[in-house]
Image (cartoon, rainbow over all chains, first blue to last red; front, side):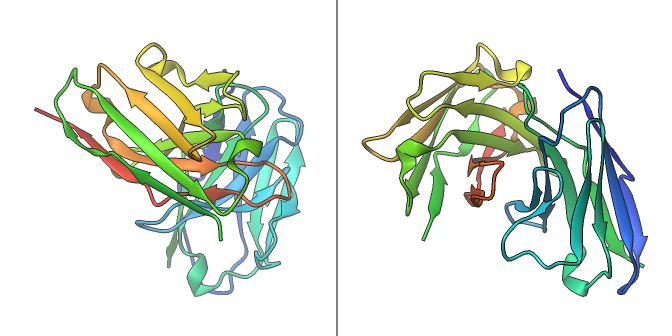
Length: 107
Length: 118
């Protein structure tokens, strides 16, 4: 089974900051990775697919990169609506696996 | 408009059974793999199961193998999760999801809460 290790587990930042979240896969998964945003009481929303492709309608301040075992989600300039929890999800093999999540909080 | 609406959650005793349903609309249900994903209270997301368009392939997370069964009825545009031998650790919000992994948009339901407790 592929383990996804996400870091950090929590992050305090200010509006306008640039932040980066990392997911590491326990084995190579090519670019079979998506990034999701979840707000309290809501279903997750996908931001990035295929590691680096921006989902339609998602602001361009979100970007993804990486391939193989290391992946990053970057938010170039934090906006108030970006404070949420973020997850990566690998779909290279079964069982699918999410990272543990990164809670992004206002500093 | 794509909609996924889960139902069937509730309180069940340990060892009991529950069947979740997901009614899909707004897209050609029979053309997509479908998934169940769960989230325990205050915890992260956990993928539970996938089913192929025609139901011929099914995959499960190890912790539910032999206890949960995913199924679908394409004529009714419905996805199901039969949950048997329920444990306290199965307590979670269960989401029905169309996870595409491509440019085609993902869709998730609003979730249904399953509580396993005596």
